[in-house]
Image (cartoon, rainbow, N blue to C red; front, side, top):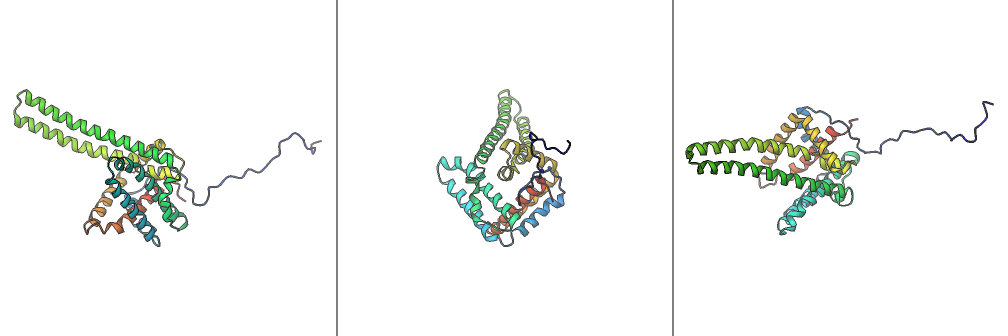
Length: 266
């Protein structure tokens, strides 16, 4: 009979689509933003700090003090600094994510990187260190190449005026190369800390996605970077006191740039 129940049939259950937890980030994009939206991150970063200035300023001051103390520890300090900074930056990202999703701020979040995603963050710091070493060696090698070419020309009895002109031209060529490589390296790591801290991406995928996101928004990122540098420079003039106001804003703007460029927008 068609109404008979098959005792061997697997029980049927309604499949419920799993929804992300409240406040969870969902990666998307990379999304393309306009220059106006990029510059707007600064103003939005300031709005984000309402009611949380004390906690964020305190966290940034502790980070600054740790950085200064490391400078006075021979050998170990410079080696430890890249790793500690990545872990602390991961904590700052976690702090802003909490502010964004719950309007709550916890000073303890500054140290979240020492207990959450610690392994991937340490690997990210190693990757940064390796890339910076290669970058430094590349620039030093190019400078030595130009210097060696000048020395060879001198040994061949070339006119000193012509030799100096060629050396100057070579060094002038090195400047734009240095700037372009600096921007590319910055793009490689710009979004990596929030990608590693707030998602399950490893350092390699985070670096690739960061680079792709920055290239997709090349002009907005460059304009935003120039505006940010000018603001930070001007705020440093009155004995660095302006940084107490500006650096929390820039930290909020950084979090918002990651959120708008690399997560799904509601």
